[in-house]
Each structure stands twice: as structure tokens, then as C-alpha cells.
Length: 288
Image 1 (cartoon, rainbow, N blue to C red):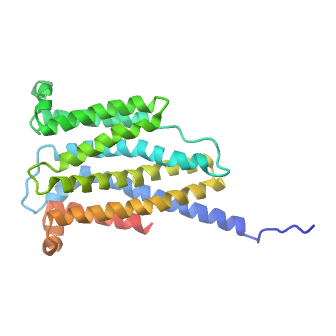
Image 2 (image 1 turned 45 degrees about the vertical axis):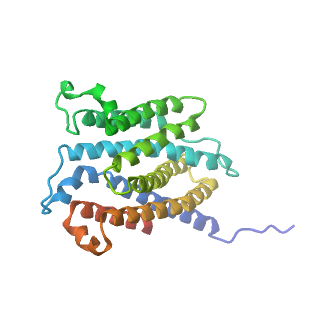
Image 3 (image 1 turned 90 degrees about the vertical axis):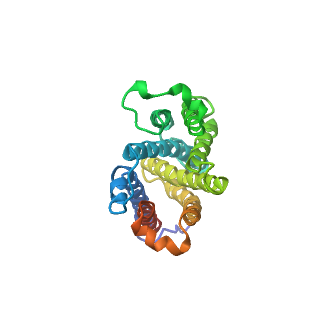
């Protein structure tokens, strides 16, 4: 019997390719983490020289909304990745410990903080006496804020239950609430804007949350052959999610900025500068 040996260096080449793919994935996650700094550093830079005034507490509110989005991404990513990971041939049985409960707790705190802002007339409260909790249900924004608080409570309960997949329902409620909040009834065609935002947030959560959990899984599996297959399966879905984020972002931009004014507004307005920063980050991520 003649034994056929793999060509010299084949195993090393595969290992090098796997490490390169993982390194690119880590680089993408680093860029996404840098995007989280925009709420801290972005408002003053975006408003500088535009003549636009900053709303009270802009930086803090932006940080709370970033935490809110991250709290959606973590459980969505776990649910998205764990199923194909468990079905891969030859994949290790062990999966990363769930962070869903911690994410729900962080989301709950962020939702409570945002609800307190709404309860004081969209102003940052300086004392508990300023917060009119009972008045939240009387306004549209207040009702949406209460919905998000309750949704994260339910998400936490689902995370520790025997059916963690049930988290998708309260998380979907958070996404819809955010989409409705971002497009009030006074806006032109608000339902169109809300629909675009729902798709934008869902694609973003699958992309970011899935990437985080894939990297955690690869670290746990320590170079198992199934790791490359899992990364490949994620990459195919991530490509579609990135396309969805890009397409909905472009449509939302054109709803706010007529095509003939886009280039001017990208540098002359706060909205345009924020959009430009996001475009640069997405371009870097797409490159990797």
C-alpha cells in the first residue's frame, strides 16, 4: 500500500491562512470598537465651525445609545453563531460562555438612563425630583422609552431560561422602538424612515455581534479546523449584512440630504461630518 502524504508546507499554509483570516477579523472588531468612541469625541468635532448648537447632554446620551446598541448586538451574535457552530462537522462541543445576561443588564441601565432624560423633557436630570416617571406613558417618546426598559428586563429573563432563543422577541421590540423614536410623526414619510432604520440596525447587530462571538469561539477552539469553516460561514452572512447597512445608510442619507448638496454637507454640517466618519470606518471594515 502506498501512503499519500500531503505536500510539504500544506499544513503550515493552512495554518498561516487561518491566522491571517483571524487577524483581519480582529482588525475589523478593533475598528468597530473605535466607532464606539465617536459618541465621546464626535459631538464637539462635528459641531465645530458649523454654527449649530449642541443639545444638552449630547455626549452622554450618545454613549447611552451606543451601550443600548451593544446590548442588542451581543445576544443577537450569540444566537446567530451558536447554531451553525454546533452543526459543523468535527467542531468541538464547547462553546463560549454566554454574555447575554450581562448585555441585558447593561441595556437595562442604558434604557433607564434614556428614559430619565425623556421624563425630564429631553433634558439631562440633575436630581431625582426632576424626573416625572408617571408622565412617561403620556408621550410617544416616553412610551417607547418604557418599552425599551421592559424589553431588556424580559431579555434578561429569557437569557437565563431554558429557551434563550426567546430573547429575539424583546430584542426585536427594542429595535422597532429605536426606529420609531428616530423618525417622529412630524417627519416626512416617517414609516419609510423607520423601516430603513430597522433593517439598518438588524444588519448591524448581525454583523457586529456575530463577529464578536465568532472571535470568542475561535479563541476557545484554539485553531481547530472547524474554526476556519465557522469564520467562512459568518463571512458570507456578514457580506450581506454589510451590504444592507450600506444600502439603508445611503437611502437614509438621501432622505435627509438632497443629492446635489451631499458633498457640501459632508464637511459643513454636523450630520454630514458624522456621516463621513461612519463612511470612513465602514470603508476600512470592508477593506479587511
